[in-house]
Structure formats: structure tokens, C-alpha cells
Length: 541
Image (cartoon, rainbow, N blue to C red):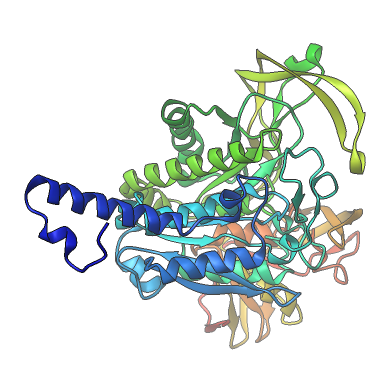
């Protein structure tokens, strides 16, 4: 092949046109081939290091990808946690993204750094959206991607049998906890990690319509390459209902039809013994300490992806990539519907569910792999011997939660001036808080604490559960200047009520913010308002 300028253009006729096409195709292929992930380069034997991810993102920019890279947080070990904005055309920031009317999607991987396929799939997706065939999706959405959320945990490389018992490769992976030893997917209420705080700030700024969190499951042996879940918190809203009832069922159908990959609701068998499979399939948890539940409680669409840990690494990356691709494609198609659902989900309900239990099951056909007991593995992980034989069993599927305790939604809450830690947490959550600037008289409800139950040590806390009741009648009270007012007639009003209610299963009482204030047979320090007062107040920054 000649290297002289204009060689292809001097050729005449169809051969010359074909040559130009071939050259353009060659350049495009070479462009993509020059940018591959560590997993791709090693034939899916290894996963990306922190340095690999940063180098990958840098090379995308050098190749002309239409993306911007920012810093979500600095980890406790000093690593910059990158986030990526991908858009076509690029937006100058959150305000322009909102004005564009495009869907805003937040995609997160590697919150558990031993669960590695999401990190690889996120990188591949960024490449293919900005340099490859998936680019047209960016005409209809702005994508915010955090490909290596738990940067510190990612670098705690160790044998897979140690860091991810039972996971089918790679041989060496990071650990699930961050540099503080915290499980970041249990931190969305208490917000103690810099990663969580940075993520909350980023999400408050960009206000995505859809939140997607990429994980790897472990536990049961089943016949699906990936399982998924919507927000499971029973404080439902139009956005959460749509994800559960329409969006995810459509994704499941597309995954099977377009990619030949079977998927199902996330969960585990209640009993993996072959003769006991019919006991049922059960999902995980409803509390907002988990990211997708937290986003659902905030009135946004939320999707949890769980690659199947017993599938090989290549298959898990493929399934996760295809799942994300279908989620983005369907979301783009349904942009108008999703925007309307998000708007409708900001309305204040009449009540707030503060405790949950599994709801009644539906009977569904579930594919199980038949296994035999095979002793105990590292970390107490119960091994089972796979047979390669699959059986479809009709069984009860427990895939949603219902209210175990519900409280009437008040007009607002009053927080005494001394509880600045509570106010700081609310502001990190992006809940609007005001401080009252003059004395006033108002009618309030009080909560009497009957008992307090303290749980075992978890994430550095001994969680607390309060039992008690609100007064049935409001009491006229003179309030002094400096009290904080949290109105529930705000976009995050349901989240605010959930956090502040004393009987909440995952609120400020749970995470010890009021330990010095609470005693059995005493009053709760926060007060509740049936009618929001008209009183001078200024917003807390």
C-alpha cells in the first residue's frame, strides 16, 4: 500500500471508492483496537487496576472521544475517584444537561471492588458510545459514569478465593470494602465515606432520571447469566412502579431475544437442596442504605444489575455489557415517559412507610442448577458441587416488600438547634433545611419512646431501633429562634420523613445520631408539624 498523500483519491472508478471505504473501515477498527480494557487484552484472565482505568479514560480522550473527566471524591488512601460525562454534543454542566431535555443517566460500577465485571463493561460501554457504533444513544441522553467507584478496594488485590469466595474468576481481584473497611453499598443513609458523600454531591448536581448500579451476585446456583432488581423500598412512586412492572420485564425479553442470555429477578433460593427448591426464591432488602433503594426513595428510576458469580468472567462481562446496552436503549426510547414519571414521583404522599416486610409472593418458573453439598470454603462460604443439570421449578417468588409500619406524612419536622449533626446529614442528602429566625408559637406533635433495642456491631455501629408512638393531639408550644425546619413539601420530602421518623428501620435513630438524646419512657427530641408554619426562615447552605 502506498503511503503517499492522496493515493486513495487518485484511484479512479469503483475500485477507488471501495478503497476509500476500506481505508475508513481500517482506521475505525484500528482506532478501537488501540483502546481495549485489561480484561480484553488478557483474554478475560485479569481485571483492570486503578492505573489501567485512568489510562483507559485518558486514551479515550486522546483518541478524540467526546467526554469530560472529573473527580467524584478523593479516597481515604488518597486516590482520585474519577467520573466521566459522555454527551453528544458535550454539555457545559448539569444546568445545560437539564435544559437540553435529554435523559440523564448515572451508571456506577465497582462499588464492591471484588465484583469486577461492571468495571470492565463500563469502560467498554464508554468506548463504544464515544468512539464506536453506540454513539447515536448520546444524541438522546447525557451519561454520567463512575467506572471505579471503590478505588481503594480495587487495589487490595488478592486471590479470588480470599476476596470473592465462590466467584468464577478472575484469579486475582480487589476487596469489596473501601479503604476505611466500610461496605459502600451500606453507606447511603449514614454517608460516612468520602465516596458516598462525593456521589451524593454529584447526584444532587446532575439529578439523573435513572440510576444503574453494577454488581456480581453470589450464593445460589441458578440458570441465569444476570439477575436484576428495581428499588425495593415500599415507599413506592410512579418511577419505581414503572421500573418493576414494565421496564425490567422488557429488558429481560430483549436480553433473551437479542443476545440469547437468560435473566431474572435478583435473589436466592430459600433452600438450594434439590428436594427443597420449591420453598421459593427471595430477594434481598428494602432499606435505603443500599444505593438503588435509596435512589428509588428519592423518586428516580433505579436498576440493580447482578452478574452471575458462577458464570466465567467473560460471560459475566458480556451479560453486564448487554444488559447496560439494553437499559440505555430502552431508556432512550422511553425518554418522555421517564421524564413524566420522575416529575410525578416528586409529589408528597399521604403517609411514609418506615418499616417493611416481604410481601406476598407470586408463583413463577425459576431455573435452578442441581447441586450437591461439597463442604465449606474460605470464609465459611458453603460450597456446592455443580452437576450441569438444570431444572425449571414453579415456586413462590418473594420479590417485593410491603409496609410493616406506616406513619402519617406530617407537614414538617422541627429539629432543636443543638442537633447540628442531624442537619449536616440531611444537607449531605440534599434535603432542604431552614433555620427559623424569630420566636413563634405553633402546634406540635411529640413522640414518646417506649423501648430501645440495640443491635450487634455492624459497619462500626450498634444500630438502634426505637418503639413508641406520636401524640394523638397537637400541643401549642412557643419555639425559640434557631430551630431547624424540614418541610415535607419538597422534592425529597419522603426521604426526609423516612430519615427523621423515630421508628424508621434505617434513619437517624438507627445510625446513632441521637444516642445521647434517647432514653426509654422519654420524649423524642424532634417535633412534628401537621401544618407548616408561616414563620421567617432562611435556607441552610
